[in-house]
Amino acid sequence: MQISEDVHNYMENLVGQVLGRPEYTDHFNHDQLADLACLALIQLRPVYIRHDVDFLATLSEQRLMTLKGYAETAVESAKGMILDDRRQNRQDEFPVLFTKPRFDEDAELEWFEKPILNKK
Image 1 (cartoon, helix red, strand yellow):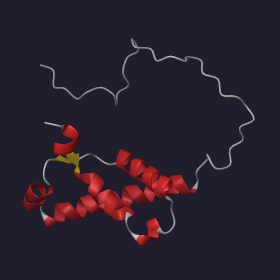
Image 2: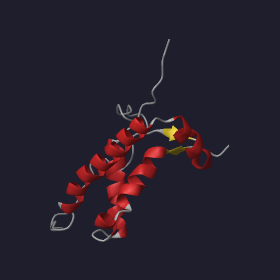
Image 3: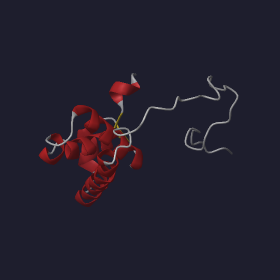
């Protein structure tokens, strides 16, 4: 089994449908659309599935509309970040200094990096 081919996040499909609309494709370049997708998907709970057909066959119309609404809201929220991109007008007059140039292998994971396990 190859997880990248056999399993995918259905929310990616819904975000892709929103970003495929002319209001986004006509106003944002490829890099900005990729950034929009990342920023939107970060806000959404993933829905991992194997086959779209099987998933959609068991999904109620009301739940599908709810998921589509979540995707639209997340993309709209991400749009503000792209329009107000701080990287566009920044001054590179000051050098960037890294206080820890190497990753600390012994550092504890952040809350979002820890796997969700039910320990008994």
